[in-house]
Image 1 (cartoon, rainbow, N blue to C red):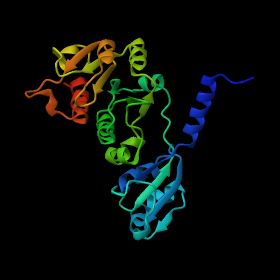
Image 2: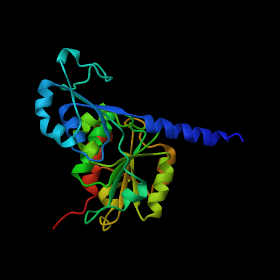
Image 3: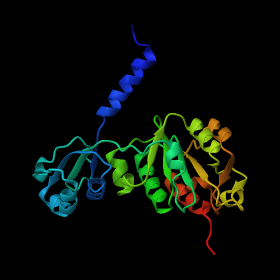
Image 4: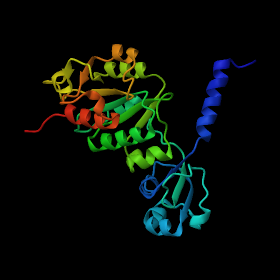
Length: 261
């Protein structure tokens, strides 16, 4: 009996995902990946100088490095990449499901960042750093139209990719609806919004909050605007366009947190 087309496509996607690898580069990104027991490591290529700097992490990881001459450093990354003599082939991390990440907070307020078509790996890397600093449970993108795990993203994240959950889901609107069903207040950032983040969260900063940010320029899609609970803006003196999306994520996370004292 011939398998239905959708079954064949699903099996193909599973095989493709199983075969997928990426190359991390740069001392920080490689060191943190080597020290991450959850990261499946396949091949490490280093110069003698980088090997010396990473020796403790290499020993801890148990991987056998390939030490090469700097002039013969040949791995499949962009030739312009600042690799610092270290590159590591790995499998993408598996952070589990949205539900698993959304309810894991300990004594921290529950905060999530959702990205609507933010495709620049440098922006996503910087957002991961901010999410880690401000204690967000996860950063959520989509499988299409969002930055995948790449060496450039990992280098910009400066190690945060190994510690800060980054999930890419099939559909953003479905993810928003799922979070609303779990009691999350979902706020979309829009420079034209009437209320600020602080006003929307007045007396509710202990509630679970998901902040949705769109790509620079187009911002949030209309469907996203219609799906969130409210649109909010960052309260500051200039035009909203002056803030990069990664800076906006950091400011929005900080503004959403309860104030002590």
